[in-house]
Amino acid sequence: MDIAVIGAGNVGGTPGTRWAQNGHRVAFGVRNVRDPKSQQLVKGAGSNARAAAVGEVAAGASVVLLATP
Image (cartoon, helix red, strand yellow):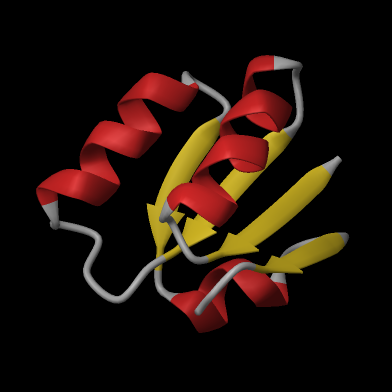
């Protein structure tokens, strides 16, 4: 399943990482894809995860998790 997680902090990062590690394609919607925190999250989530702009990840997803403060 293609899942978009808007927000890459504690609330969005935890389920997004678990979903990616369990075989779902997860795209984290972030403000800055070059941010070291975003890159570390994607690296930890594995090969099924990526970071991109919020609009991009939401457009291609079957499910969207809004995980922002």
